[in-house]
Length: 239
Image 1 (spheres, rainbow, N blue to C red):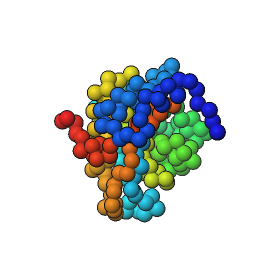
Image 2 (cartoon, rainbow, N blue to C red; image 1 turned 180 degrees about the vertical axis):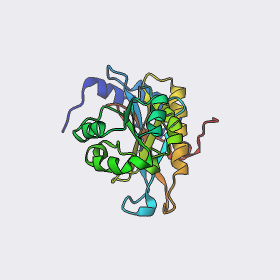
Image 3 (spheres, one colour; image 1 turned 90 degrees about the vertical axis):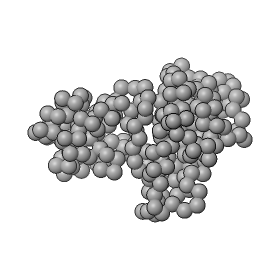
């Protein structure tokens, strides 16, 4: 059994493991219990009342966090011709418009955080699934990362501003970052509220019973802080 260090144990002592906290109080505690020397990421973890094996119980969507993620997002766009020009003008960090760049990615280069593609490039992008898939970098229409050339500026700007993708994993959980421990608690709360609104809207048609069973927030390597699911489902950006 792994032994925890003194700083972790001190952080855990501040959290009541049997309590479901109000959302704002929970993000404050997640900030307070971050003990690492770097600027930790604050993440939301949701246990869903869904069956990942059922096609009509899948959850996959995106959310634009009002205060971003607190990090520089490197965007690569698969496009050619007019699409490549629009991507460059919109601030894409890399434009894969040639076989040279695609071969570079096929060889394992993935120094980017988000990949976007125009539909006409998906034939070539599909061959990169072995590299992009395991890193969650494969462009996907459901996630909004496959779009027409005229939509590239909007999608690129959203990605750089703090656009996050969330999806149900094989264990019926969803994990999403909402910012950094250095963020003001109110900004983290507003990012959390935006995420919850998006997850509510993404409720699949096949969902039965309790949609969200458990929620917790935590900093990198920090203890989990339980959030009251009912209160989390009822908050909004207006509050």
